[in-house]
Every structure is written in structure tokens, then in C-alpha cells.
Amino acid sequence: MRRFLFSVSALAFCLGVFAVNAAPPGTNAEIRERLKPAGTVTRSSRKESAPSVAPAPAVIQMEKVSLSEGSEHEVKMLNSGPGGSMIFEPAVIKVSVGDTVHFKATDLAHNSASVAGMVPDGADSWAGQMSQDISVTLNTEGVYVYQCDPHVVMAMVGVIQVGKAVNMSEIEESAKNMKASFAMNTQRLEQYLSAL
Ligand SMILES: [Cu+2]
Image 1 (cartoon, protein in one colour):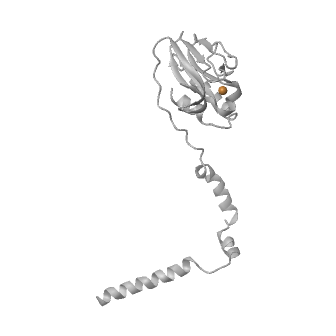
Image 2 (spheres, rainbow, N blue to C red):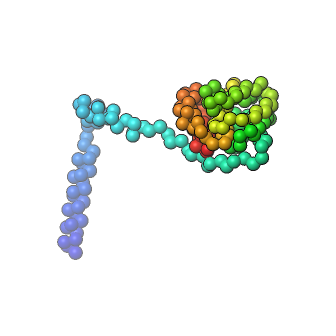
Image 3 (tube, helix red, strand yellow):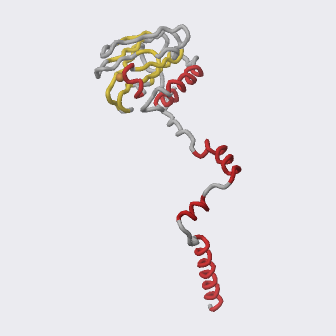
């Protein structure tokens, strides 16, 4: 029992010493001086580790969409939907070659226009009028990205896969550039593409 008490007091003594060492007295200026990174070695190693310290936020993967049944499909242009504001609904669809997509001006002040360079080679582009329905028949296989012209800065975009995603790598590359034009919902397009 005595031995135990001795151990406890010895331990308490050590902890006391440790506490003193861990929080030595000093002015704020002295503490700042101690915390300052020292030398160029520290600085260059900090630079190398920067990407792992502040990684780009990971894109939340979307559930894969399945092929839409039938040959006619409807996409609504909305001020607000389950996926957010200023949005196409559904924003990602998979259809078959020769199918028609009807863009519906459910809410006003939107349009649907294919994005230059983000349709399959040889595919027709389209550009709907503001607040107007537009129907597009898709005869060329591949991935199409379209936008609402006045709301592209809010990433009001949509994706259609027609048949197989034969041009996916080109689309993913272009999507990186397009992302720079989004001020809001910056990850939307990547998320949409993850659903294909
Ligand atoms: Cu819009």
C-alpha cells in the first residue's frame, strides 16, 4: 500500500513537471517566435505536402442512372427541384439512338442549348429559345452536355447519354474547363457524369 502511494505521488510529480514544461511562461511574441517555421527546409517540405494538406473536395458520386424506357423523354427546366435550384429535371438521362428528348419550359426564363464541343463528333447541336419548349432527336451515339444560357454560371447543365458513352474521355476533359465558368454548384457536372 505504501509502495503504491509512493508510485502515485511519483507519477503526480512527473506529471507536474511535464505540465510545467509543456506550458512554459512567455509573452505572446515569444510564443509566436517559437511556433514560427524554421529555415528553408521546413518551407520547401511544406510546399511539397500542400496538395495533401488542402485537397480539392471530393466529388460526391451520384447513383448510376439506368436506360430510360420508351423513345420519348421529358426534361423539365426548373427554378428549383430535388437536386437544387436552377436545374434540369432529370438532369442525367440515358436514352437510345434515335430517341427524342422534350425539354419543357415548366418554369420561365430558361432554355436548353447544347454546349459547343460537348456533343459526339458529327452530332447536331441545338439551341432552344428562352421560355420555350424544344424537342431534340438524338441520332448520334455518345454523351451530350447542354446548358441553360442565362444560368450556366449556376451550373444549370444537363447530360444525356445516347447509346454508349463513346466520347466520355473527351467530355470529361471538356468538363474540367467548363467547371471554371461555374460560380455555384461547381461540382454538378462532374456529379452528373459520375451517374453514367
Ligand atoms: Cu435556366
